[in-house]
Image (cartoon, rainbow, N blue to C red; front, side, top):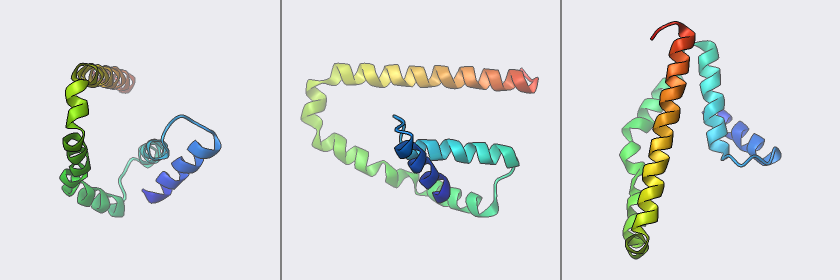
Length: 108
């Protein structure tokens, strides 16, 4: 996982891409896992550990919301539109990608 993140970071910096390195690293990891069609034991163990600790990753966001509550109160409408719009776009892209994958695999 770390090697993929570092590779993604290097690609993002040297290619001057507008994407974060960890996102590129995650995509690289997904491609590697799809190519091998299995999850290595060490990666599965690490992933399970990170998933169990997932609630801790939301603490900084919660603290940020609490400390910026005045800003959120003043700009609640644009923030709500951005959140709902980005969620809708993400759901639509995910559904279209899943539909294309299922069609390619021959299942519906």
